[in-house]
Image 1 (cartoon, rainbow, N blue to C red):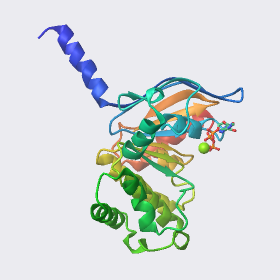
Image 2: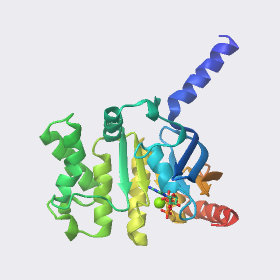
Image 3: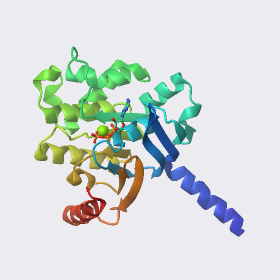
Length: 263
Ligand SMILES: Nc1ncnc2c1ncn2[C@@H]1O[C@H](COP(=O)(O)OP(=O)(O)OP(=O)(O)O)[C@@H](O)[C@H]1O
Ligand SMILES: [Mg+2]
């Protein structure tokens, strides 16, 4: 085999492993530049966290990457598809089938039970029958330890239970990428730990995870941390060199790094 062939294979391989590619992403709101020339690549199965001071553009970046908002310029390629090239319908379908979302305000439908909220995206997707969907939701709730809340009204469960229900809902259509904006923001430290254990497990099983967080303990769980400052990517920290179980080493390195960023 010639060298050129080998090179092409390596390039192909990199492409196949790539889940997300962001190139020169900028976003302006009413003349106010919120994101400036962001470049970012995320591999399949990676766990990446975005940090930075309040107002630096973290949520905006997440919205632009996940098609909830559109960049003013630049490119977002999700699993080989350039988002700007998709019709509204294609975008909606991609979001429903390939992306899962966990936000701090979980936007549950108030008049539905926890179970009905969880199965809702699967009914919208309409690829499986009711029975199969409900069974899957039950299995997810079981795994996340909230089986007993199925029939509950969303106002009668704890913050931690609601957050776990949000993860069930985000996972019901087996997304390729799970996005979270401060998914543990409303939780105490033990509930945060539980939710992060669950996210680590989901990630280990192959789902790519991209989270925004203020919490260094949460970020210490990731393979890589991106630091934004005034809408620009200032630095990246690799934590993948540590085993996931090396919590203390991860946290210490991350905290020192964040201090250096002025966080
Ligand atoms: N829809 C909008 N219209 C106008 N300005 C906006 C809009 N959304 C965000 N901004 C501005 O963009 C900047 C970045 O906001 P963004 O919500 O992305 O920050 P963030 O890093 O997520 O902050 P936080 O940590 O407080 O959630 C802020 O100055 C904000 O006021
Ligand atoms: Mg935000």
